[in-house]
Image 1 (cartoon, rainbow, N blue to C red):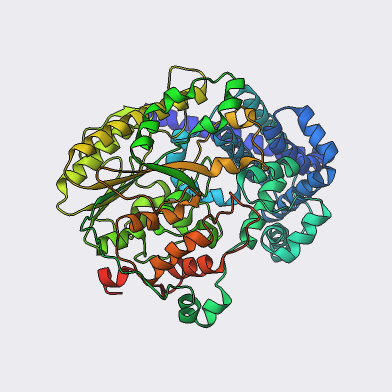
Image 2 (cartoon, rainbow, N blue to C red):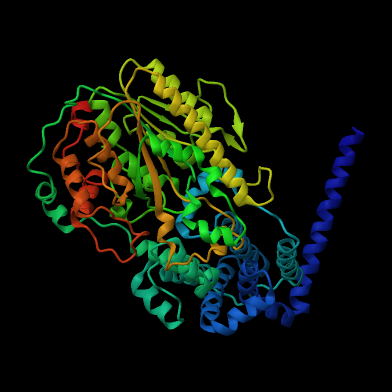
Length: 618
């Protein structure tokens, strides 16, 4: 009973304190009207400066940017003012409106800070789709709470406390419907600047916002330097929206004719003529890259004897065939490369979305996997990480995989290397699937071991730790290939990296190598290996670099797999346009044939020949 009375007394005291503070704030509204007005007036300027200061770190750098780009800062302030006025009209309270806006602005600013420090890429609106994978992202994001960040957040809190204490309010008496209409109009005006090209284009031009087409990450980063964070975030959002893929006119009018004109008329007869149906193993190695392409430059930076890290990789090359694949991404968005391998289609043809798998219709997909399944193969997918990351489990379930194995599904003992499951465990799981399958196996594995962060290692230098990860991975690959040599099942292994690694922002090895938009194409080139444990004729393979989406057709050709009018058309196109990639060739013209066939299979009626009819009766 006494405890209940004590709690009631405590609650009453808290309520009395709250009403006392509220009464004092209401009194301050009338007693200090000029202070309140000044706090309201300067808030948009304040929040813009604090948001940008997070990125520039030092006030001197922000002042320099303002001096060089006054119109862009004015643009940021006008947008912030419109948002604040809109919130003020909706809520009437100056401090509550500022609290809402401050949380949004500072959350975006801090996210940008952490994202760039993690992988050297700036935050864009389409990254918001990854919010559902927040748990996965925080596992490898470089999140460092610095005294400077605490100071800047503290300054924002002090401004909010001042607004709360002096309690400036919207005093003008307006009817509710008028106030709501005006408030929504202010917010809608900001949305229109982003979403409506007829509005955004002249506005960006007026305030000299850089609207140059950002075809790869390095061009994006240079645009960030020109625009600052807020204008960059809005303009790239406008750019992404204006680049939304539209149905081709000829496809809309007559999809059958639009597609059939690009399908092969003469299809070569192939049906595993050599009577060999080998296991086909694709190993897409996370962040694997051969940095010896920068050997001379790295030696000048003090990184010597790079060969020691790639000894077993070179051994695998000597036992197989190697060439150069052009991947569609750098430093992140593994799913772009994964899409090209699993679909045999270019992401360029669907507008280069960061997460192409999120664009797919909810239906069975005409993947490369479905071809192997229709030929009598057992099909499997391995990814030693969370099944929810990029929504892989739910989406890839429509790709014709018989088995999907994520981090909780391994049937072999698990060992970690650094923060992730060891690549050797993936190789062991592949062997287990080969042993357990009575049919030939088609398997795609996307590894995880070499993903950032690279803080786990013997060195304080993350690049050295990265190289040690690479060495461990290729040592395991060599052991895996040796074991495959001992089995009596013919097996082909494709080994390729998905992209160059993510390395921290301003201090990354890329900045030390002076990689910019003019010389960044080399970062989209990946050495790949095709290895086999039987006598495989690779004489048809060319030394010329090809986009990675052609890889499935190269392998089909090597194993004499059956062809249809679509796969034959893609094989023929390899010699016509071997590389089709926005990031690698930013000025490249559209390829109507590839764009039409890709649209048909991803968003259309799948007019082009495919294996789904045989598998599912479509």
